[in-house]
Image 1 (cartoon, rainbow, N blue to C red):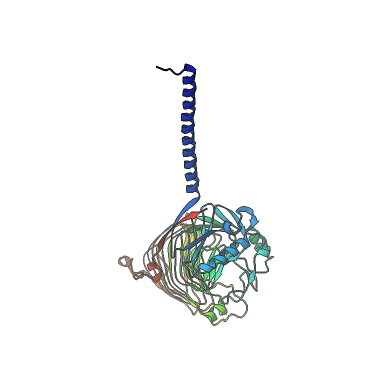
Image 2: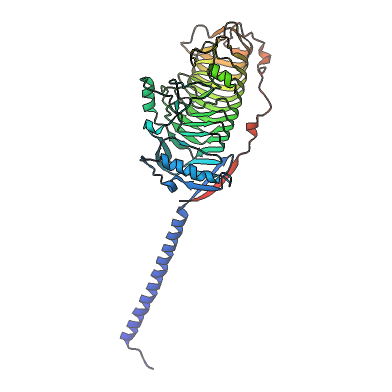
Length: 486
């Protein structure tokens, strides 16, 4: 038998081992690279899912338009270019602009129809503190001139007019108004025009603003005006409690609107319902009506959880509030009006308030004196009637109610039932003060004033609450799902 020399056998064995090890290494490395490649491919996608009034056929990121989220680069042009380009898809299923994680410094930009602005959970829109970035626009026709100064007003950070189907939403991403510079100018009386708001949508229909955090607005936070079919939902609003006029959500001459599941800490009213100012609001004649306010939590030591007015000259009607929580807040519900306002506040239904540490539970003011100018009509008297409060529990309250109508123009049809108010240790001597009002009560403690006679304990459910739903409650939300490539 021919034998292979041992050295040859060893050489061949070594060679075979090298080949086998090489094949194994190549296989292992190839598999690792394959897995790495697959991991990279998967990580380059971002799954997005949320509820909305409309889903979109087209998506883009602000980075596609040159946006830089470093907190220093100004992105105003990038945002406006993105909106302008995406507006081309309005008739082709609509579009959405994604704002990824980062700090995105920007001035004001205009929105478009059939459009969604979506903020990632770690995205922050930073409002520019350069006043030159804020254009000046005309005052609202129902107000006549600006609120901070006569004349125009600075445009809002996110602004839109004559739109339909507009959504501003996110994963609780943040819009930071960086309002300190504006508050300082307001206090030092150095403003030439009225401060900007964070979000203002005008003359529009089908609006959704949801699942965002708004902080440090220069003035009002959310201001839909002359619009209809609006949902504001899941919003957190935060401002220092002494910041000037940082109202939370202000529906203004709007119809069919729902405000629900919002948490607000504010330097002014958490929700302020409006419809124009004095003769300008009377002439414009556009009321706010069919409004739902549901599951609101408010902290506002110097203002109201819900205010109706004072700019209510176009009228306010059919307001339904339920499940309201207020803590360390000046008043639960306040109606603000005065001679010269005209208009009306009627058919208001409040059911279920839980209040703790309040100055007043109920407050109606008929002598609110701020006027748009000197041309207001002293014969323009407001009509306040059909105001219903039911199922209220309040603790640590300084004064149960301060209800002041107008001499010769009483507030009528007031109904208060099933209300328990625990007074603070240093409460006012008289828990109720009432002038120029008419109404009835049942099951109210401490006992109310004589102008609100008790109808007996068996009528604690007498204050009316509508049973029919409003159209805004019947809108079906869609579940929108996207896989986005980053």
